Image (cartoon, rainbow, N blue to C red; front, side, top):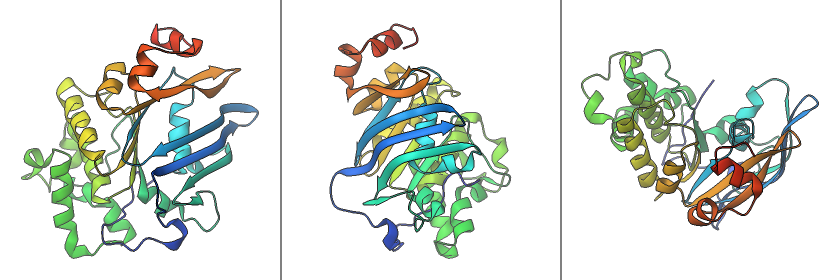
Length: 276
């Protein structure tokens, strides 16, 4: 499985996913995900603006990870799940037959809760997408790997270890390595599924600082249980709740409105430590 597949800076975008002018980076309408007779996520309507950080909050089982996986068709890789509704990116439905899922995931990358480190060296991990899609010249791999590792605040720690196995890195370093692998591919949107939940405070701080830097040029969607983290890095917050067994949107707004003046009972319960 490719976690993140590249979209090189010099790459000519495929016509099927050409960027359209405007501030909407990604849009969902009536997005619903079912597993057999069970509905996991129901009727999500959502617009995500360019170069913003949207934090997604909510209890376990509210469909946060399911929503992320639906936004770049990672959900296609889970047998038994059915998706209805629409997600539009670059002015086109991501579910159109002409849309290449690998190209889509190149441009809408995803970082998982636990770092996904592939067998091989640190360098091989950073260039994994570049190597396997052939969308960047081999002579540029070294330069792009170094630039990505620097942007992920990892270069100083691994510059003399590029040939060593990636498994030798700490968990925090591995997560930043996954981010470097993404950045080498230059995605337009990054989906981050609780990327700091298994990290120590120092590594968490490094990831948060990276998120704040990246929002100058990219759109980020961050699932987190950490309310302090949401306040520190997010421009907007979306809260999912469970209604009749399925995840739905309970509330959305800027951080101060949502966290300091919640309007829905579900959000009040979540913030109080209960289950909406």
